[in-house]
Length: 259
Image (cartoon, rainbow, N blue to C red):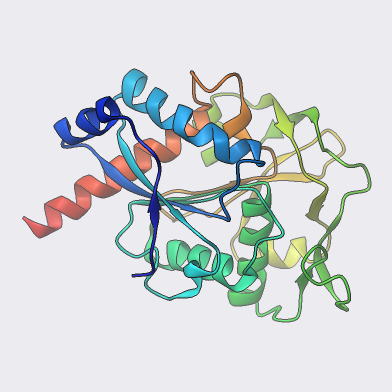
């Protein structure tokens, strides 16, 4: 497996994680930077999940370049592709997403992770091998992800959620207000992605896609908004809590199959 970096923990946090049998391994895919707010929020979220929810995650950062190896995220109980695009390796991020999708590993993609989840699905499931992300390949002929007509950087906006969807069951409402820091979003080929099984379960008030999920997968959710930036980090967003629960359940199944 490629080299992964574990998130920094205090002795108290390490002991707390060691004492519980419910710990699950979380791959944080992205190019870690102190200048990306989502990245600096992760340790706070991990502590809050452990202390408030008793959902203990051993989290490891996987640089996008390392994620290109086929076995990088195998053995993890969840994969979270975090913001911070353009990633150093588009191929690495897409490889991690494909492994999570094909092997039933719980997956969350936020902002850039959402964009690349759609890109992976378009290329590997729908056969749209030439579609591109405008931030990564501005000279391409066919874009799936393009600059938004109105940048969402620093904005909050309403998201309307499809009843009966995974997103609705996780968030507990058919309407929510969420924070964005994205300048790119999906544009074309959305009907093709839908026809091949991807569900667009959240839209803004103008009908633009903001949430995608994959029915039949244990947990596959992608949001253009950034739930990790909700509040001050002491009360994780329902989407983050749901990923943690899915990871712990995956870990329990993995242990049971080895028993």
